[in-house]
Amino acid sequence: MTNGWIDIKNADVVLIMGGNSAEAHPCGFKWAIEAKKTRNAKLIHVDPRYTRTSAVSDLYAPLRAGTDIVFLNGMIRYALEKKRFHEDYVKAHTNASFIVGEKYHFNDGLFSGFDEAKKEYDKTQWSYEPDPKTTGYQTDATLQHPRCVFQLLKKHVERYTPEMVEKICGTPKEQFLKVAEVMTSTGNAERAGTIMYALGWTQHSTGVQIIRTAAMLQLLLGNVGRPGGGVNALRGHSNIQGATDMAGTCAILPGHLATPRGELKGLTPYLE
Image 1: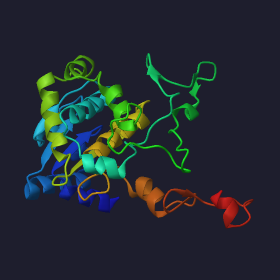
Image 2: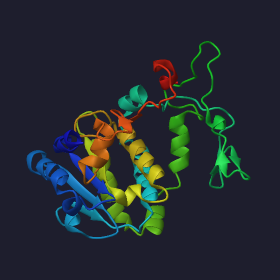
Image 3: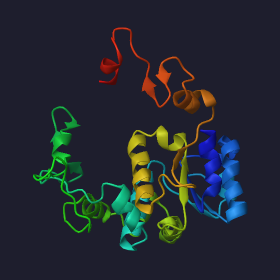
C-alpha cells in the first residue's frame, strides 16, 4: 500500500472523494502535496464538508452525502460528450468494443433480468454477443455499434447533465464543470490522474457501486495501470489493507487468496 501512496506523486491531477486525507491519512496525503509541488498537480476535493483537505486543494466542490455516483457519472458524461477521454487506451485496454446481447436493457431504473421475488438479477442477460466464427465474442473496433459497451455507457449516462448533477448533488453547476474539466484533462497519453478515496465511499450502502463508477471514469481517461493513475483506497493501518495484500493474517495469502482448507486434497481442488 505504501508504494501505491508514493506513486501519487506522479499524478498531474489528484481527485479526493469520500475522505479527508489531510487529517485522516497524512502519510499518504504528503505525496499528493509532493505532486503539487514538483509537477504543479491540481488537487480537487469533493466532499460534503469543507476540511483541511479542502483548504489545501486547488478546487473544492460540495455535494450532498450519498450522491457521489451522480457526480462521477456526470464526469463520465462530460468526458464522452467533450471527447476528453483516452480513445486509444479505451479501444485497446477496456471492454468498450464488446457487443452486448439483445436481452440487455435498462428501463425505469432496473437492468434486464431482475427477479422481483428473489430481489436479484439474472446476469446472463447482460452477456456479450457470441461470435459464431470463433469461441470469443463479437466486437466493434469503431465503437459505433449501438449495443457495444461504449455506446450503452453513453446512453446510460446521458441523463447526468450538469443541471442534473446540480439538482441531485447540490453542487453549483459552474463548480462541477470546473472539476470535470480539470479531471478530464488527463484523458490522454501526456497526463495522468489519480483518485483517492476512504471510508466515506466504502461504508455507503452503495459503496461498491461508487468505487466501480470511479474505476469506469479512470478507465475512460486511461488512468489505470499508469504511473500516477489508479483508484487508491486509503487505509489507516498496515494490518487492514497491508494484511490482505501481504499475508499479514493467517486466513489470507498474498493477492487476497483464501488459505486452503483442511478438506482440500491437492492444488487442483484449491484452484477450482
